[in-house]
Amino acid sequence: MEQLWAPWRIRYIQKDLKKKKGCIFCRAYRSKKDKDNFLILRTPHVLAILNIFPYNNGHLMVAPKRHIGDLEKLSVEESLELVKVVKSMISILKKVLKPDGFNIGMNIGKSAGAGIEKHLHIHIVPRWIGDTNFMPVCSNSKVISQSLNELYFKLKRCLQEKR
Image 1 (tube, one colour):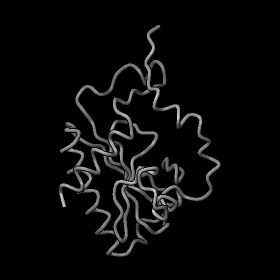
Image 2: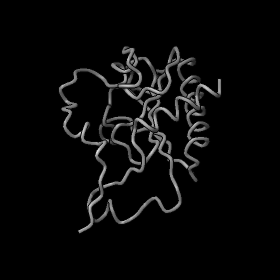
Image 3: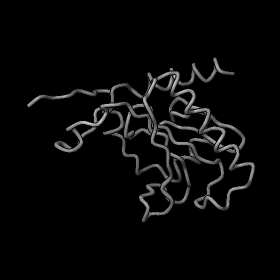
């Protein structure tokens, strides 16, 4: 059997994430430790954060600052800023990772698959031709090709250059 090594992930495997109380988005927005939270961008109404359990390299989540689970209850300002940040993150991901496409979506409500159902968020998942393979089917594993730390710094640098 061939083994794939991703030693940087041990930090997340050993960390008991359920011990942290409260919402990950609210906690990350309030914290001043953006790098520790992999928070890429914060605006007055929105944040963009790397998913620490990504479906693919570059998997980001964009969420309103306000703890809200209903899309229709967003203010006009929150809605506009949410879409503006999604567009900005797509632009940065294109520049840094050069994906062939994206899956972009929201899971609203537990029955729709929302892992964090009380705080809505938009997933941005970069995709490449051929990025699906036998690993998820045969071994229930996904190979992520880049560490979150490396990706975080590349995206932050690109965001700063864009301004």
